[in-house]
Length: 224
Image 1 (cartoon, rainbow, N blue to C red):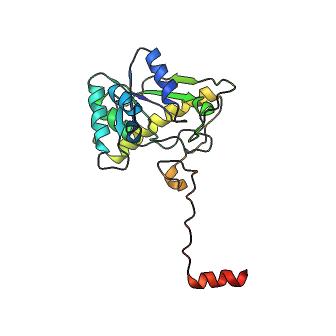
Image 2 (cartoon, rainbow, N blue to C red):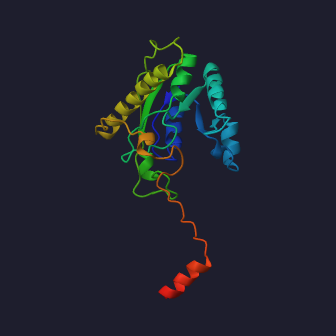
Image 3 (cartoon, helix red, strand yellow):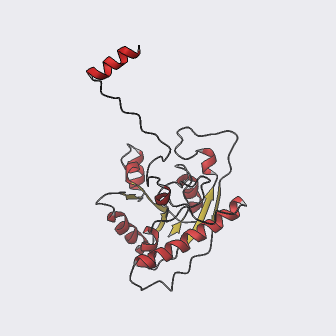
Protein backbone atom coordinates (compact mmCIF):
# COMPACT_ATOMS: atom_id res chain seq x y z
CA UNK A 1 0.00 0.00 0.00
CA UNK A 2 1.24 3.46 -0.93
CA UNK A 3 0.10 6.46 1.12
CA UNK A 4 0.55 10.01 -0.09
CA UNK A 5 -0.57 13.60 0.39
CA UNK A 6 -3.29 15.23 -1.72
CA UNK A 7 -2.64 18.70 -3.17
CA UNK A 8 -4.71 18.89 -6.35
CA UNK A 9 -7.50 17.15 -8.22
CA UNK A 10 -4.85 16.51 -10.88
CA UNK A 11 -2.29 14.79 -8.67
CA UNK A 12 -3.49 11.19 -9.29
CA UNK A 13 -2.15 11.57 -12.85
CA UNK A 14 1.54 12.24 -12.08
CA UNK A 15 1.41 9.96 -9.06
CA UNK A 16 -0.04 7.13 -11.13
CA UNK A 17 2.69 7.77 -13.70
CA UNK A 18 5.29 7.48 -10.93
CA UNK A 19 3.84 4.15 -9.77
CA UNK A 20 3.72 2.71 -13.30
CA UNK A 21 7.29 3.86 -13.95
CA UNK A 22 8.29 1.79 -10.92
CA UNK A 23 6.71 -1.34 -12.30
CA UNK A 24 3.37 -1.48 -10.49
CA UNK A 25 -0.22 -0.91 -11.58
CA UNK A 26 -1.90 1.55 -9.18
CA UNK A 27 -5.33 0.91 -7.66
CA UNK A 28 -6.55 4.23 -6.25
CA UNK A 29 -9.18 4.68 -3.60
CA UNK A 30 -11.17 7.56 -5.08
CA UNK A 31 -14.43 9.31 -4.30
CA UNK A 32 -17.43 7.55 -5.78
CA UNK A 33 -18.66 10.69 -7.58
CA UNK A 34 -15.83 10.34 -10.13
CA UNK A 35 -17.01 6.83 -11.00
CA UNK A 36 -20.37 8.28 -12.04
CA UNK A 37 -18.82 10.60 -14.66
CA UNK A 38 -19.66 9.37 -18.18
CA UNK A 39 -16.75 7.68 -20.01
CA UNK A 40 -14.27 8.50 -17.23
CA UNK A 41 -16.20 6.38 -14.76
CA UNK A 42 -16.25 3.40 -17.09
CA UNK A 43 -12.51 3.68 -17.73
CA UNK A 44 -11.45 3.83 -14.09
CA UNK A 45 -13.87 1.07 -13.13
CA UNK A 46 -12.46 -1.24 -15.80
CA UNK A 47 -8.97 -0.34 -14.57
CA UNK A 48 -9.80 -1.76 -11.15
CA UNK A 49 -9.91 1.50 -9.21
CA UNK A 50 -11.82 1.44 -5.91
CA UNK A 51 -14.75 3.83 -5.22
CA UNK A 52 -15.10 5.40 -1.78
CA UNK A 53 -18.66 6.23 -0.73
CA UNK A 54 -18.01 9.07 1.69
CA UNK A 55 -20.56 9.80 4.42
CA UNK A 56 -22.68 6.87 3.26
CA UNK A 57 -23.91 3.53 4.51
CA UNK A 58 -21.78 2.03 1.71
CA UNK A 59 -18.55 3.51 3.10
CA UNK A 60 -17.37 0.11 4.38
CA UNK A 61 -17.34 -1.26 0.82
CA UNK A 62 -14.13 0.60 0.03
CA UNK A 63 -12.41 -0.88 3.08
CA UNK A 64 -13.46 -4.40 2.09
CA UNK A 65 -12.43 -3.87 -1.54
CA UNK A 66 -9.07 -2.41 -0.55
CA UNK A 67 -8.28 -5.36 1.73
CA UNK A 68 -9.25 -7.78 -1.03
CA UNK A 69 -7.01 -5.92 -3.51
CA UNK A 70 -4.03 -5.92 -1.13
CA UNK A 71 -4.49 -9.60 -0.30
CA UNK A 72 -4.50 -10.42 -4.01
CA UNK A 73 -1.18 -8.64 -4.51
CA UNK A 74 -2.47 -5.37 -5.92
CA UNK A 75 -0.74 -2.04 -5.27
CA UNK A 76 -3.33 0.10 -3.51
CA UNK A 77 -2.97 3.89 -3.27
CA UNK A 78 -4.56 5.65 -0.29
CA UNK A 79 -4.85 9.36 0.47
CA UNK A 80 -4.94 9.27 4.30
CA UNK A 81 -6.28 12.83 4.50
CA UNK A 82 -9.38 11.74 2.58
CA UNK A 83 -9.50 14.97 0.58
CA UNK A 84 -7.28 17.76 -0.73
CA UNK A 85 -5.42 19.40 2.13
CA UNK A 86 -7.20 22.33 3.75
CA UNK A 87 -3.95 23.56 5.29
CA UNK A 88 -3.36 27.13 3.99
CA UNK A 89 0.08 26.08 2.72
CA UNK A 90 -1.01 22.59 1.62
CA UNK A 91 0.94 20.73 4.27
CA UNK A 92 -0.49 17.30 5.18
CA UNK A 93 -3.41 17.50 7.59
CA UNK A 94 -4.48 15.22 10.41
CA UNK A 95 -5.08 11.88 8.73
CA UNK A 96 -8.12 9.64 8.78
CA UNK A 97 -7.69 6.08 10.02
CA UNK A 98 -8.65 4.19 6.85
CA UNK A 99 -5.07 3.59 5.70
CA UNK A 100 -4.10 2.37 9.18
CA UNK A 101 -7.05 -0.04 9.22
CA UNK A 102 -6.03 -1.55 5.90
CA UNK A 103 -2.39 -1.82 6.95
CA UNK A 104 -3.08 -3.46 10.30
CA UNK A 105 -5.76 -5.76 8.90
CA UNK A 106 -3.52 -7.09 6.12
CA UNK A 107 0.01 -6.67 7.46
CA UNK A 108 1.05 -5.31 4.06
CA UNK A 109 4.09 -3.04 3.60
CA UNK A 110 3.12 0.63 3.89
CA UNK A 111 5.26 2.91 1.73
CA UNK A 112 4.97 6.64 2.50
CA UNK A 113 5.16 8.99 -0.48
CA UNK A 114 4.90 12.73 -1.02
CA UNK A 115 4.17 14.88 -4.04
CA UNK A 116 4.42 18.55 -4.92
CA UNK A 117 3.85 20.41 -8.17
CA UNK A 118 0.41 19.26 -9.35
CA UNK A 119 -1.01 22.11 -7.27
CA UNK A 120 0.94 24.59 -9.42
CA UNK A 121 -0.64 23.19 -12.58
CA UNK A 122 -4.15 22.93 -11.13
CA UNK A 123 -4.60 24.69 -7.79
CA UNK A 124 -7.06 23.07 -5.38
CA UNK A 125 -10.64 23.23 -6.72
CA UNK A 126 -9.61 25.31 -9.75
CA UNK A 127 -11.29 24.53 -13.04
CA UNK A 128 -8.66 25.81 -15.47
CA UNK A 129 -5.07 24.53 -15.46
CA UNK A 130 -2.16 26.96 -15.46
CA UNK A 131 -0.24 25.49 -18.39
CA UNK A 132 2.47 28.13 -18.73
CA UNK A 133 5.20 28.26 -17.70
CA UNK A 134 5.70 24.50 -17.62
CA UNK A 135 5.43 22.94 -14.16
CA UNK A 136 7.69 20.38 -12.52
CA UNK A 137 6.13 17.44 -10.68
CA UNK A 138 8.01 16.09 -7.67
CA UNK A 139 7.21 12.64 -6.25
CA UNK A 140 9.25 10.81 -3.61
CA UNK A 141 8.86 7.45 -1.88
CA UNK A 142 10.36 6.55 1.47
CA UNK A 143 11.19 3.32 3.23
CA UNK A 144 8.28 1.09 4.34
CA UNK A 145 6.94 2.02 7.77
CA UNK A 146 7.45 -0.26 10.74
CA UNK A 147 4.05 -0.94 12.26
CA UNK A 148 4.98 -4.39 13.58
CA UNK A 149 4.49 -3.39 17.21
CA UNK A 150 0.86 -2.55 16.44
CA UNK A 151 0.10 -5.72 14.49
CA UNK A 152 -2.20 -8.20 16.20
CA UNK A 153 -3.58 -5.65 18.63
CA UNK A 154 -7.30 -4.86 18.73
CA UNK A 155 -8.05 -1.99 16.34
CA UNK A 156 -8.84 0.45 19.13
CA UNK A 157 -9.00 4.21 18.50
CA UNK A 158 -5.62 4.59 20.24
CA UNK A 159 -3.92 1.98 18.04
CA UNK A 160 -5.45 3.39 14.84
CA UNK A 161 -4.48 6.92 15.80
CA UNK A 162 -0.90 5.89 16.56
CA UNK A 163 -0.54 4.14 13.20
CA UNK A 164 -2.16 7.08 11.39
CA UNK A 165 0.12 9.60 13.10
CA UNK A 166 3.17 7.60 12.00
CA UNK A 167 1.89 7.52 8.44
CA UNK A 168 1.25 11.28 8.33
CA UNK A 169 4.60 12.06 9.98
CA UNK A 170 6.45 10.03 7.32
CA UNK A 171 4.57 11.72 4.48
CA UNK A 172 5.25 15.15 5.98
CA UNK A 173 8.98 14.44 6.39
CA UNK A 174 9.24 13.52 2.70
CA UNK A 175 7.34 16.63 1.67
CA UNK A 176 9.69 18.77 3.77
CA UNK A 177 12.59 17.36 1.76
CA UNK A 178 10.87 18.08 -1.55
CA UNK A 179 9.87 21.62 -0.61
CA UNK A 180 13.03 22.46 1.34
CA UNK A 181 10.85 23.87 4.10
CA UNK A 182 9.71 22.87 7.56
CA UNK A 183 6.09 21.94 8.15
CA UNK A 184 4.11 23.62 10.94
CA UNK A 185 4.66 22.14 14.38
CA UNK A 186 0.97 21.24 14.71
CA UNK A 187 -0.79 19.44 11.88
CA UNK A 188 -3.89 21.19 10.52
CA UNK A 189 -7.14 19.67 11.77
CA UNK A 190 -10.28 20.57 9.76
CA UNK A 191 -12.53 19.66 12.69
CA UNK A 192 -10.98 22.10 15.13
CA UNK A 193 -10.75 24.70 12.35
CA UNK A 194 -14.47 24.33 11.63
CA UNK A 195 -13.88 23.43 7.98
CA UNK A 196 -16.10 20.86 6.19
CA UNK A 197 -14.58 17.43 5.52
CA UNK A 198 -15.40 17.38 1.82
CA UNK A 199 -15.96 19.80 -1.03
CA UNK A 200 -14.44 23.19 -1.69
CA UNK A 201 -13.95 24.83 1.73
CA UNK A 202 -13.80 28.28 0.11
CA UNK A 203 -17.10 28.05 -1.73
CA UNK A 204 -19.69 30.43 -0.38
CA UNK A 205 -23.37 29.66 -0.46
CA UNK A 206 -25.53 31.97 -2.47
CA UNK A 207 -27.67 34.20 -0.31
CA UNK A 208 -31.27 33.12 -0.22
CA UNK A 209 -33.76 35.72 -1.49
CA UNK A 210 -35.79 37.29 1.28
CA UNK A 211 -39.51 36.61 0.91
CA UNK A 212 -41.43 39.78 0.21
CA UNK A 213 -44.29 40.87 2.46
CA UNK A 214 -46.73 43.78 2.40
CA UNK A 215 -44.97 45.38 5.38
CA UNK A 216 -41.60 44.93 3.70
CA UNK A 217 -42.88 46.50 0.48
CA UNK A 218 -44.33 49.40 2.45
CA UNK A 219 -40.96 50.05 4.11
CA UNK A 220 -39.29 49.94 0.70
CA UNK A 221 -41.79 52.52 -0.55
CA UNK A 222 -41.11 54.81 2.43
CA UNK A 223 -37.36 54.58 1.96
CA UNK A 224 -37.73 55.38 -1.76
